[in-house]
Image (tube, rainbow, N blue to C red):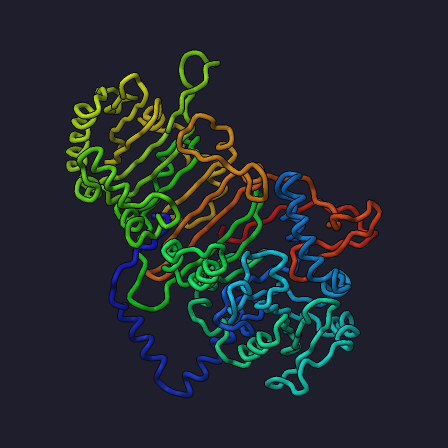
Length: 610
């Protein structure tokens, strides 16, 4: 299933119990292990993780390679490119330009490969907490800590020495051996900074949080000390990330629920309470952006259901499928949907309501009559409605164009259920029930009075039952889809790098969705904005269970490619004004007034093994 949030009660495996016991044997050995472990994890975690307190809500490490951000700016339409550039300008102006800093002159010569921003919990009224992430306002949020790596200390002193000399001591005495500097800003909240060592500096608008960062650096419970975070980042295979991130999912969900106006009820946020954390990386691809993430559960009795058995259903769907959801076990999928409202918390429909509706309409119970024979791989798809026969100029009738396929574990029980449904449809609803042959596949078709609705079911090779809703949809499935969804170029682009086998896919072809006019199941898509259908071609999500406590998610967004980006100017810049430069923590390219035209952009080469 796509979102394996079903929690099973299991005893901890014996190796884990023995491993935990061994950690407490030998005081000197444990001390040595802890010291070496901090050093090892610090290499796999975002830079400066040893200066980020362990209770951080969000940690975001942004690449300081301006070439990567320039490549990102080439995606989208003219409208979305302009919107994205405006966002970058806001970040740049807030972080650097307003402080009389220039990225190329003052930052780029000495900064390390990535800059880490951490949002920490603070005590105070909800109005003091961030409402949106990321946004330009986040830069000055009172609960932000920024860790800046120093790749060249001499160049850093040369670039910023004069500004640092003008700064004041925040306190007379150093804090835990580290001097605290206060950088005053005209009409703004002061910025506090500290140099932890020759490789790391840390800044925050709040002195108390700067001290908390120093505490973490001195060994008081930093992000490095969370073994699950380090383990998750160790599973990430991306070696050229545009950004890396960590999210404490339940804590952030609680914060956002409290800051919403009106506040969000706790039961609506329940879907975010199962995974303890999420860590991952975002990287560029030739046709868009890819996100690789790992979520996990903390040690305890709760575990993820194991199994990666979803490998064939995309080959059963036609290549023109608009939206597809596939998984390894429909029975497990429904239990996850029903248990604790893990999924339905996000939708207006409740699992109990769907179950009751089926029983009221047919007299059959989902739990008793259907689920017992549906413990196999499945796929649910919304297809491109076929063109209606007859007058092409006539407006097409709405067509649901829906298909459900399940590999049954009990064909005899499934056949008995279909026979019961035949009787219900014929006797209660006066549907015409007839048997037809489609390419050598026997299919039973239900036709409503006046041909207002057509449904059909049958069997494919391998004990796969299919059920379709819509005129002409069964013909797209039986005997085979011809060209399958697995051969669709956008499906390959958005799921091709995911592990095989896996736990299931979600796929949406936005490029085709905008052209469909007669489907009953597709909501209107946003036509404008960075997340609009005009900028995004397709979205693919793949879930893979790594262990009983870890799940990997591979998300790829295929984007349209726009014009080659030019220098990033301020919104009100004069035509001959010198182009502005990007900030250290903002993904914006820098250019001097005499900068040459942008060079051709190289293709992004996937890492080895992908």
